Each structure stands twice: as structure tokens, then as C-alpha cells.
Length: 306
Picture 1 (cartoon, rainbow, N blue to C red):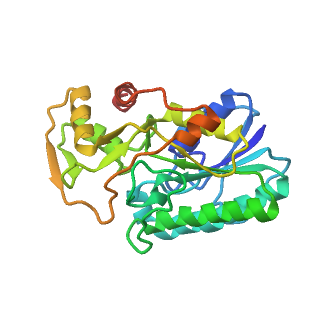
Picture 2 (cartoon, rainbow, N blue to C red):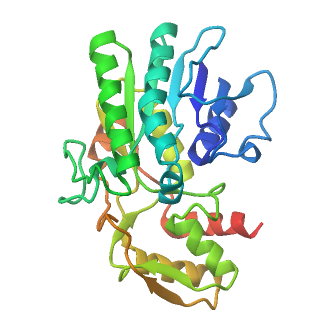
């Protein structure tokens, strides 16, 4: 296949570039590099890989055919989308519109990288795909949450009206090598703090929960979704739930750090729980995560040490 990946120099996008390139597909990576990095894809060379620096909220022109468009372009951490609120909204709205138009023009299939954040601060747990969410549209996280909710609506509109063959991956917390130490998410922040001897900062009392999926498992899940015929949203993530306080303690243990845990005020609208129901992925994709948290954290810590 000839595949375009927007946001391909970012964390998940660059791992997808690796995976698809190794599978023998022709990969076109497109990124404006406001949160992505060339270093994530610098090792990929050859006739089957091309990089274009481009803002996908602007018109996209590509010669030749395309088999698939994978739309991963977007700031994805709270620090990034609070820093770039307008860009986040634009890439969710205009970027989704431009990439869907490209897929329609090329007769290509399309996958949207959506997010568990569309569930907001959920009132049910675990979260199933038929849950509509509990989102504050004007809160600090609203620029990301609503951008992705709008993007999902546009994808389904292109599917029903223009008959574009679409997929929606609702991606839950994912971690692994190539995360930026300063991106504000719990795992890279805790690992960086532990390795440098800083106190680990836990927001609130730390009882809020998350579910963490290692990047290799996530990429396998996305590839399974690409090769399916499922047009409805599919949760992809690890259903094993743990508290942020327990995560901090585990990272201190695995790094052998002398760091202590300190508490800071909980940010506004920070979700209290986050746990995917992956029954749909299990039954329709025959997919579930295989790498447990301790194993994944050890590999991630090793990468951060190097």
C-alpha cells in the first residue's frame, strides 16, 4: 500500500511509520513539526519513505495514488494543546476536512486517530464506544476534546455521504520510547524526574486512574483496524487500570530512584477515571495488549536512560 501519515514525526505517528515501512508499504510522512521531531524519523530512508513538512490545515497536494490516509496530526498532551489551542482546533476541524477531501479524491481509505478524551470526565467505567461522554466544551481541555469530537462527526459524515471507507481509533493513554520528557504526561514526566533525582509531582491526591498501553501493542491494534472493515469507533488501549499514585511509586521502584512524591493541586477538568472497554477490539479485531506495564516501563526507562 501507499500510505500517508499526517503527524508522522510525532510519538505514535513515527512508530507507525516504522511499522508500515518494515511491512514493505510505501510511507509518506507529513508533519509541520510544532510538536513532532525529525529525529523520530531520521533513520527512515529509501525509495519507500518520503517526508514533507506541511501544515495539513492548508491544501494538500500529492502526486500519484494513495491506498490509505492516516490522520494523526494534532498536539496530544495537555501542555501542548493549552500552548497551541487554535492550532489544535484547526487541525481537528480543517485538517480533518483537508485529509478527508484528499482521501475522497484519491479513492483511499481513511483512519482518524481519535482519543479517549472524547469521553471527558466519564460518568461510567469502563468506557464503551456507545458512551457519549461528559465534556466541558469551554474548559482548558475543551480545545482538544471538542476538536476530536468534531473530527469524528466529520469522518462519519464523509463515510455516509461520500461513501469514503473510514475508521476511527479511540486511542487511550499510550507510552514508550520517543515521548518527550517535557510533554506533561505522567509516564515521561515521572521517568525524567526519577532519573534526575527530582521529586515526582502527583496532581491531587493521586487516586485518579489511567490505563497505559505500550506503543508496540498500540501500533498492532491500529494496523489491525486498518485491515478491518469496521467503520464505527473502536477503543484501543490497555484495560488494566491503576492510580497515578501507584504509577509514581512503581516508577521510583523500577528506576531505583531516591525521589520522593509531592502533591500539587489538581488541574481543572482532569478526568477522575480512564479505563477502556476493549470488547469490540477483542471480538472484531482479535486484538488486545500483550505487554504488561512493568515490562513496558522497563523498556521505556531504558530508552530514557540512553
